[in-house]
Every structure is written in structure tokens, then in C-alpha cells.
Length: 72
Image 1 (cartoon, rainbow, N blue to C red):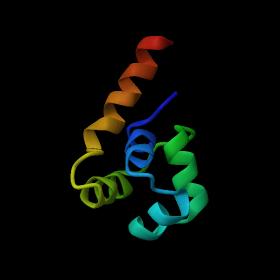
Image 2: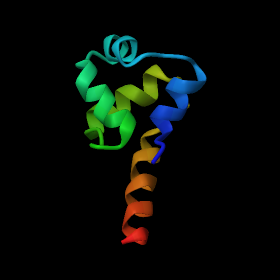
Image 3: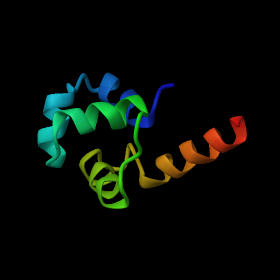
């Protein structure tokens, strides 16, 4: 499953390590969020939205939850 963060990072050729520095989190957390293993907290989702200039909005994580619920 591709996440909005994965699409953003692929498009802009950003590595997990670099994005982690950008949002002030550990590389492993970024990797898990990017791969859809975990969802970010509201605080982290807000930071992601801010640091991506709105390209990965907080709403994207809510939409991902709705998609998962519909698939179940």
C-alpha cells in the first residue's frame, strides 16, 4: 500500500533519514509511517503537513483509515 507520504518522498527523492531530520523524528518512525505500518499522531501529522507545504495534509491520514475500514 502506498501512502501519501511515500508518494511525496518518491516524487521529491527524499530519503527516510532526511525526512526524519526535517520533522524531528527518528528514521525508523518515518519508515513505518511511510510504509503505512503506523499512522502518525495528530501532532506529527501536523508537522508533516507543514514541512511538506501541504502536499501531505493531515486529512490524508484520516482518509487512509476510512479506506482500511471499507476494505475490512
